Length: 189
Image (tube, rainbow, N blue to C red; front, side):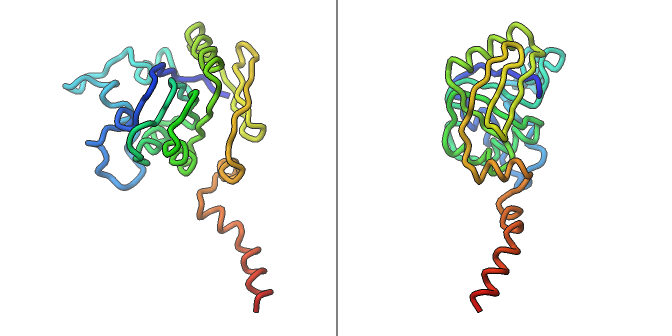
């Protein structure tokens, strides 16, 4: 359960999420500092206080709620890194670009696609109560607006669901299969 940070903008592309000029590092650390950089800061590096991600007195939580077509544009994995590094663990939208969705899932970030109507209701709830709580139940694949009690199911690949539930990346998952692989290899001999 968490409150959410709304960025009610459609077609947020990966360059808006993390501008290309910040893609020099190859480690996943430090990208959160430049999440939505050109929306969070003026050209002379002054904080724009009313941008929702900056307005910590008003918005907090590990759920980012965004408009339709989130993560479009280039295929940079750094966009998922920046969102995760900032502290978000869930992104809710009514549509995700496929490459962004896969990059998010591969990096421990859960993209939840909801209907446009439910997304609108979520934004309305946050507008009425900026500390409203939402419950994400990955095991049952639901997101619930705790204020209204409305809930919606979301789709996720079974393999990626298992990885997220257990905190695995692809290599961690393969390591869990080691006994089965060793068994198979012993039978093959």
